Image 1 (tube, rainbow, N blue to C red):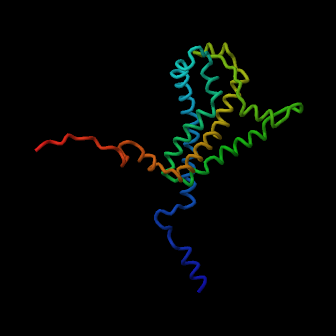
Image 2: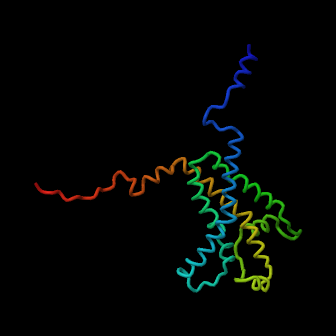
Image 3: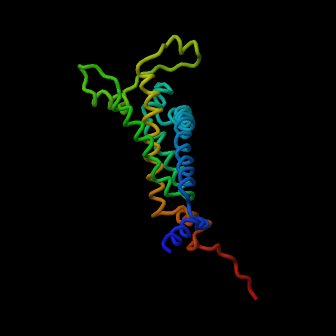
Length: 211
């Protein structure tokens, strides 16, 4: 009798709307892919646009190169866009989005642990400086000729590694924190703050025609 009950319970189909382990894994993968796409494509584009259009207005005498500017502000150009997209995407599979930070953190942790140092270096300090510190000195180049003349520099390699390893870590944190915050301040609540959605908006006055 007990075996019959167990087999009946195991044969019950998944209720509509109930996520299966496979679907949760796919949802998590989509959120994770979004984080890496933002870092590898959008962050560099945003940094370039900011450097080209905003910096000349707020600091006209600044001659910092594009890559030096981007690598010096990896946190801002990865965390903020990912937080915005994570908040918007939290409408879909929010619980999967909350744990997106785990994979980039594990990858970065592995790189910190396996970072190559000499016997005369403090491993933690050297690894932390390589993946988190700023202080980049990278010249500007406008063509491949300028690039070859400039030559590969340690700061260029360090900046690229920070973008590809530390950048997803920052973006994952921003994405997950925004998805978590969306549980307390949902997207629909912010939409109601817009003028066209506010119920307390003052109606336009209309002239009252006389009799």
